[in-house]
Amino acid sequence: MLFLLSPAKALDYITALPLAAHSKPLFTQQSAQLIDVLKTKTPQQISTLMKLSDALAGLNVARYQVWSPKFTAKNSRQAVLAFNGDVYGGLAAKTLSEAQLGWAQQHVCILSGLYGVLRPLDWMQPYRLEMGTALATAQGKNLYQFWGAQIADYLNERAAADSSPVIVNLASQEYFKAVDRKALKARVVSCVFEEFKSGKYKIISFNAKRARGLMLRYAIEKKLTAVSKLQGFDAEGYQFEAAASEPDRLVFRRGPGH
View 1 (cartoon, helix red, strand yellow):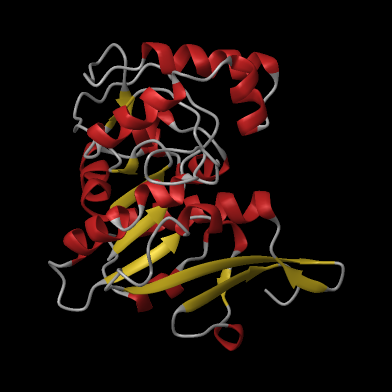
View 2 (cartoon, rainbow, N blue to C red):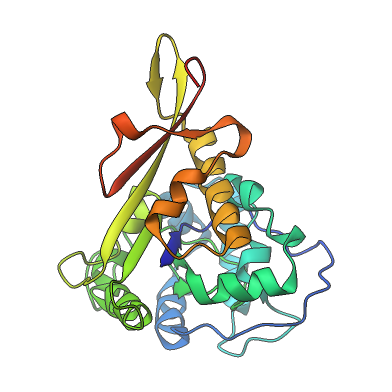
């Protein structure tokens, strides 16, 4: 099984890391093409394009200017240790062992507007470029058109080793849209996390993001290779809800009744 994850806006390039093991990003050429386009934008244009404050727009314009196709220990760090948002709070990758991170390297793909797909230990330079950004390139009017079927083709390559390939989608809709479903050959299983609020179960964005990270950590710790094993997930009060689930849509709930 392959697990898909979204990236995070928040980044940590400050915390000291003991881990030296790393890999190089796979789509550096495509990233460089996007950077070339981004380098032509003024801070004001970036602010408008990405709906950022002037300070954040300035920060990211500076990042684009220093971005290099050569990744080093000075300008990069491993993607799974650099992302620092809600999902990654649940995953808590900095507390995983080297062996566990090695397992994740073989089973996890992080979708990215700039990098296409990142493996957990791929070196990554800091950036901001969400997949939903309407950045026009020679390939089209947005990043979905830029990436086309490239991400799905890569996932097919990765999943081909399994006789019955399965992709567990823990990414957001914005990012999973970058996977061309017509080109994708693997079965896709989604995980849904709901809370009991105001008398009914519903998805609360912050909690759902954290739960995706918790689910991935559970999979890494247990080295899960079968969809049925996902049903055992019980971190932070969640339980599998068979009655609300479908074969390719697993629902986990917490609150009254659980």
